[in-house]
Image (cartoon, rainbow, N blue to C red):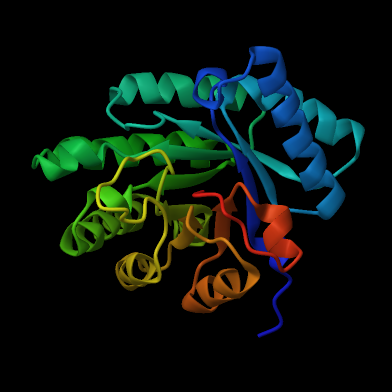
Length: 249
């Protein structure tokens, strides 16, 4: 397998100013630095919060770059109402975002509200695909058991297969993590090989994205060989350069 690692890297910055302990002005600069790095190194995508989509799109247009822009919806707990998520996604679409990464309501799923989650996946996916956007569903594997990872991946697969054309399946992803979930006992908060294997086995023809936890080139290659299409990381350049990152995401 001839792997061009840049073709799989979604370079990511999702901290608020408060979370990072910096000013809003400094946060905007962090976003601009990330977008510029994506342009300079031909990473697939810049993954940022919704309020920065317009800035990113402008920079990319001025550079006549092929980098695309993704944003997160319902981030990071996933418990916003379906309508709130749709409104947030529509605003991002209006701002010309390329990809929508919804945090699925995994809490509702764990509590047995399966119909609500199915409705959310259908409506969120339809809004994205109807507007020619790629759609990702973040399932937060650190909050789930292995069986729950399998079941929620299969739920997403089944909703997509029942409602959308086959040629659109690859434009819908099951994505592992937000990177913001808090675990105990130093358990991983992001993608693991075991978790991604379970997702792969239960997501059918959908694409899959490993987010967080991939910190070096070797692990990135292993993930790709496992069937992962995209890798979300705050350390894209280090991975591309063959170095190891100490970052959690």
